[in-house]
Image (tube, rainbow, N blue to C red; front, side, top):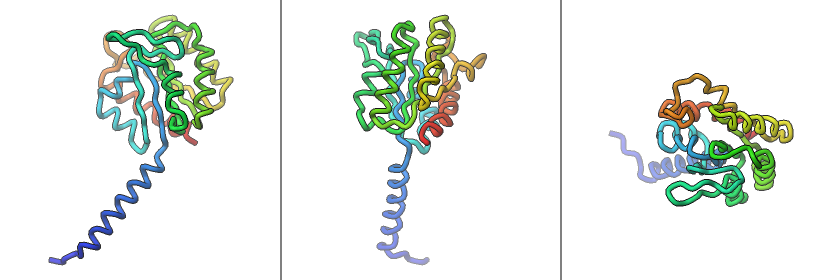
Length: 201
């Protein structure tokens, strides 16, 4: 049996750790702000792993969250709005912001709310914003998607991830047609990754 000096083994371990640290330090930093629909990513470990692969992802997903209007109440408390959440991170926000919120509100203030979010994200150092469309199960969600698509004409840094079109007719949803089961959560993670990588460049 060939004996490897302990010093050589230690040097190999330290080198491997250095490479891992360097890889982590170079990973694209992503903040994902959303409501209970994308929160399925946190309940399905395989989906969360798929989304995080090679990325430094912060998930800030809250039941009852709204964009800029005061959030609704769930279990006796209301979460921060999406805008408040983004503003709270300052320059630690990261290179990419993902927004998936709108199921708990009307379209009132949504258009101007998008502009406020974009200004905040860019001022805090984001290179790009990925905005996820809503499942158009109600007319109000269709109107919200119209506001999202219009915003892309005002903001070149905004990429639309058209989840509504991508998921149309798929058996990925729970009974309400909005919240995701295991397969849907995995599909959402796979769907979002290319948009995140493009937004980082």
